[in-house]
Image (cartoon, rainbow, N blue to C red; front, side, top):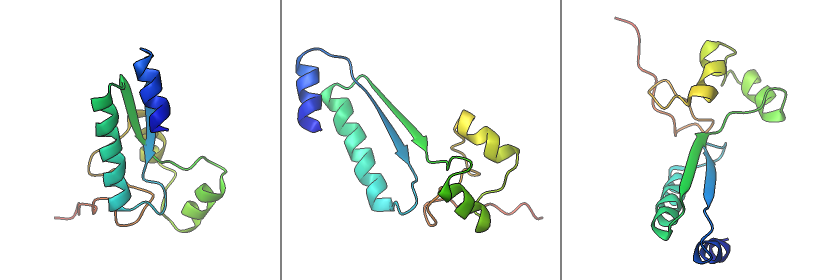
Length: 107
């Protein structure tokens, strides 16, 4: 892949890359690897890099599994967050241990 990117950049092609993060099974280490790759691509001259969080497609096996495990709720936050890429404290990763803990609203 990197050889192809170098070749394209050498030939003055404009490149865009798109990454999806937060897949089930992803770790803090793999996220760091992805971040390093994004930085490397930018230094190499890639013009555009997009990043989005993983959201299971409705009707997919993972979607059904997440519903069964109460890892997603079909509420406004679920349906709006993919379109506005909520990166704030309420954003949840599909990978346990990578999401920020929920803040308590009590008190």
